[in-house]
Image 1 (cartoon, one colour):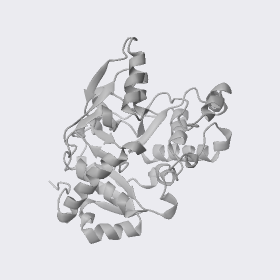
Image 2 (tube, one colour):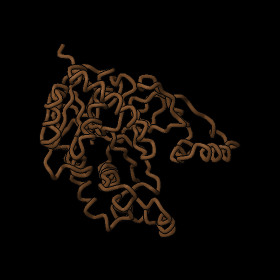
Image 3 (cartoon, one colour):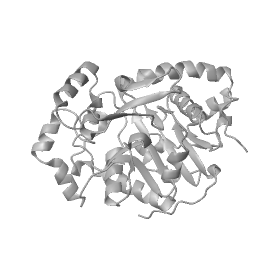
Image 4 (tube, one colour):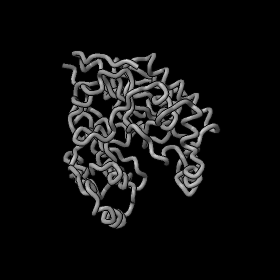
Length: 335
């Protein structure tokens, strides 16, 4: 891979890219996410690739004015894999930031864009995926550990490590590089039966296949850079965990409790706060176990199913206000 030198750029060459299909609710979520962006960034444009039905809804409500580019999304690209493995087909700007819709911006994203500019393609992630990444989330993980299935997958595909990517934020500025990653990831997905990975559709409440383990493999194979998912005060996105997050009703003031020890911070997946406190207490005698900072990430991501009702509550209330305004606000600056 190559890394370009940072250069002076026009913000109009950088833009946010969303997709929308299926339930109209998902289109609402895109608009809620974009509305949060406009609190801090009124210069960079936004694009959406959507179904015909969603485009008609945008136009009917007057929100089509929020986007400088509205493109059709073919049926074969209306899935997680169908889009995120093929983002090279959807690059309306010179530099594109692809975002999930269950996100809210919490601060001015200028520094984040500056940090991304040198890269032709990247995804937020960490350097080494844990054993659960793309694998069984149940007792089946015991067999994976016993038979060293993760190690066997890496060895079979000539990998020395496996990135853990979080595709809530993807960035693409070079079409050939973006295509190369996507095509290799799609090839890996087709060879799932040669790996220890399992279909995400087997998980409860999951209907769509995951793109992440295959993209993680592709980026590892191509020696790409993953943009640090967890980066202290400069974290691009953090998960919304109710007992680790303080915020006002409008999410304009938000801070997250960020544990500096990666293992301790990984315990945020424990759903019950009392159990979380109990487990933390078990590790309290060890150095670094209590080290933490209060961080305002660029984006708060409502990725955990049991936390999505917090986003839903805010989105429902904000949506009523936006409809009342008839889509005539939050447009990018033309200056």
